[in-house]
Length: 388
Ligand SMILES: Cc1cc2nc3c(=O)[nH]c(=O)nc-3n(C[C@H](O)[C@H](O)[C@H](O)COP(=O)(O)O)c2cc1C
Picture (tube, rainbow, N blue to C red):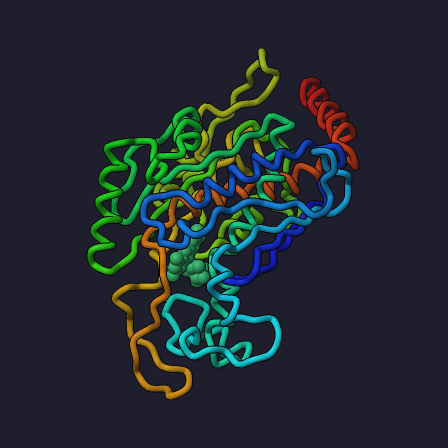
């Protein structure tokens, strides 16, 4: 079983990730983990924080001589901004300083619900953890999941299909998605340059108005073997597990598998994917993939396609009305330095979350305490499929 947790606050010393359950002897390239962290920081419409941080993972446990040793992995990503917050958020003693106190909770954030729940009158303590800065730790953990999947030919990539009302009007090919992922200077990770220009204009317009904008990203996982997940129990269904993982990303308000949303307004004959047998490959295939690679909660051998729908960022330069948690008076919500559009970054985080869920389902199916043992089990299953 692959498990992971994160710890750390937005302006604390560091983000931490703990990953347990990877087989021994999996090669771990720290440069690859750092590359993934860098990808999360990119995108047109990000705020000033990305200029301060240069995210890098430092491994403290579980990796020796460039490989996993079957022990839990612990890593840390330093927050450079901590230097500016050390006095305001000390670990020991003292009172919170007034200028960092946040008593005007921001609509759309965990500020008020969290403050009420934990009985804290300073939303600072809530937002420090609810902030999407936490997703840096998820991306580092997800990179390890990707490294496992890569050993078995499974690749993941993401792209942006909508920013506000501007949408891609056509499907993107795998090659296009891979190419735009590799292009680190792509402003919004959209495969269509003309659409991307219109998306940029949408971000610019939001910035000018002191507003923010949401959108849609799509994650595609290629070469996923048939048979991950199960129809047998509700919590084993892989579509449900993927939805939970992607929905848990800050600001994601809708998750779609394949053509799920459009399918709801269509007819069954136009939504299900027909089945063919390919004798050369000795595999069953589908000429279409509206199901997004999942039927009955089980992967069917086609690309796994997961889309995340993001609401516009909650922190606004032209703030909405709120109520002060102490005086209870009507005031304007607090403003924190903030992003305008995070759809491409959220796509990278979703790649990590999808990778972790797929890697866990992969290890549930093939098991193994060492990479060699996992590989033998995987190859044995391949022979079973050949003979089916
Ligand atoms: C990569 C990424 C960066 C984000 N940056 C910001 C930000 O700068 N300002 C902001 O208000 N919200 C930002 N968010 C969204 C908030 O963290 C999120 O809306 C908030 O924690 C409330 O959670 P919810 O929207 O999931 O209900 C970001 C989300 C992601 C995925």
